[in-house]
Length: 139
Image 1 (cartoon, rainbow, N blue to C red):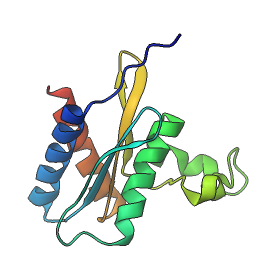
Image 2 (tube, helix red, strand yellow):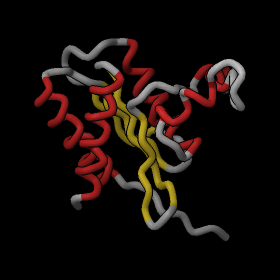
Image 3 (cartoon, rainbow, N blue to C red):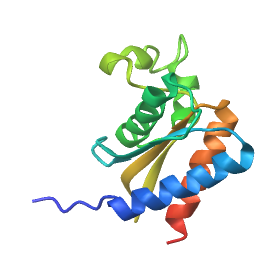
């Protein structure tokens, strides 16, 4: 039998609120997604004015970070032509995203979920995701 540790709805709310505060601070409305350790969506927010395609991108960034147990930006170089996981982004129906903005949530060495953010530049998405992680860690 396995015993799993996972994010709960209170964790997800804290992460979304922290990420939203950062998005408001930088003036970029974002889509923010939280998934559990099994890549299932726990919570989602589309701020007023966030880009429509960013709905799917935020969810898939969180999915990718949960599933691969890595930040999405760490997958960019290895997935380029000639590198070990070239073609990764075309697997699983194209759900794997290698653009910054997806971060795994780690507790006691285990990935227990992830946050995915989209609608700004990759640097803005990452900064907002990091703010969500800081809100989680502060609890």
